[in-house]
Length: 407
Image (cartoon, rainbow, N blue to C red):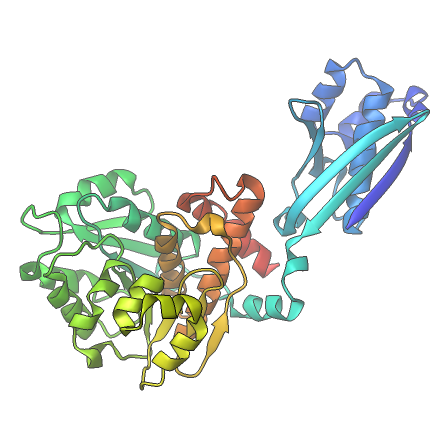
């Protein structure tokens, strides 16, 4: 989408009440820049022309977008860049601009790429329809009470990322159920999430003798996630088995919890309200399939795995993440290689957990959660690039991704 505008420079030389014109059409920073450059007509014309070119690119003109919603700034080399303070900004993937002067004219060009251009409209509507409408009369409990069971010495960040992702996805109450040894660390990191410490006899990880404390803390929650930062203590086998048996509401199983799934009773795991989120190596251990076979045949390996009578939903993470249940299968098209970074999977777990806690059906929670996660990563990439993207950036851009889908 390209917008081009040509503006007469001399119109500003002859303009009466120039100060009032600047106050109406220019931001404070733009006026400061114009002042610092000596109120040159060329500068005023160039900035105004860029604003006009922007609204021509998006096809609206000034109306729903005000002139001060578009701000022209200049980088260290003097090249103009655009800041947008309007809801349309959430739909912009890339924006570039230039301005030149020829005789009595300033000529501006703005090139905009919208995110919607890269997502088929029918797919966009499909995900929009999955978004849960917020009850305007709701309270904290209305929007889901969810818990994250995990954490161990040296692995505090994972459960914190998971909690913050759940909050940013709309959960009303988020609890970290963690070993007491790390509770002080998490309490320092926590602002909106609530910490429930479990006695661990200073072991630095959950111990089975106190598993009933965990059961007590989670019994009134709407959904839980287990595995983030859990560690590889052998006691986790019995802890996992006990939690899954006793908590019959939705569960997301991730990370270290997946490591032990082959060691627990298969029947208690085979439930329609369970989501398991392995990467390829974790799926290899869980399924028994060779890792090279999975890498070369991602979809085929899942289809073959589901020839068993499996009721849970699997999320095979990686490029073009696959979401598979007994009846449904979808390949996701959002995300980028910058998201291949520590903690990214913990963010995904928190997003899916939040959707489950808000009452979205199991497969759709996984489907929408993966899409949102990837879209937030794509928005982060657009601003930060792939090289510098870290997991907390995904959380930072979740609100923008959600606003984009809601339209």
